[in-house]
Length: 367
Image (tube, rainbow, N blue to C red; front, side):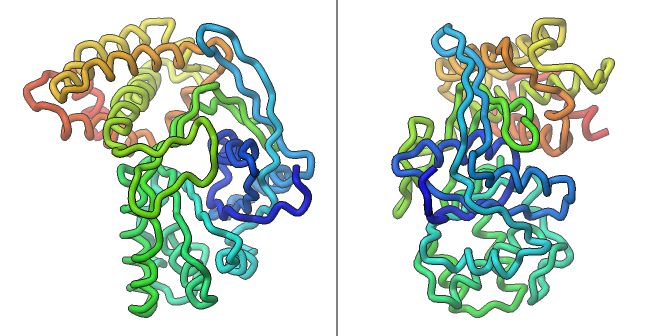
């Protein structure tokens, strides 16, 4: 760890995914980036995690899996996190960081429903009951008042065109909160990046840290003013995110949701893991759905070869012998995920392609 490393990234979210993804990349970058982590919920059980994230010795991330057929099992120490705060009790300190000219990146991963409006969002004074975009609007207003320089916002929520969506939600909240037109114009001029992230992070290490697969991707869509926050092999700036989004959403993520459906309507054992289900009858169902219902949709869209290759990679990742990826963890917010992963495929694909198994899953989830 570099002594005196300044905070350059203000991160909203404490998830083990971020610990094993962006925070790891920032730690391994040359030069390294300092991160201040903000817990946006008031969950008291995460206090110990917050303290451990910023420990001087760092926290561990264990990388386990196969790379080119060879086993990898190694531990890395993540030392990018410099401070940890909570919106429920550290708002003034978070405002100061938001206005700090050394901070040039805002990053977020606040959960699949993190953008949903809440009744408290129009309040002119920030409060814990607000949605993340409404809180973010108040923090950006503090930066604007302080004359802070422009910044780049990198949302990582699994929302298509997440940068554009977050920008729209913040602007909507800012108008309802009574912020000035000048501030709203300033919001428009900030850089809101669309990005896609991918890494299976299977279990936590207490009090902070995680076990993750070797595969990792942070894809950022090219646009004026867009640049990667640091140099790292897992970070790519690409011309268009949609092909990558479709592959991940309708193959990997959809495969997870199919397993969750089979688990919920089977024994729902709390100890069930992805690898175990893929080696049994549910895995055959997933493969059949990929083969008969998903791959034809990609072939009709001119992406047949890419989809077949991605399916093969995904199956290898699901069968990773080192990761115990619990189905119960994947099952969180199952209904919302099915709507995006399976319902989104219905909306995108050629409607003449039959998808009986997927339609049955969607019907069970919405019933």
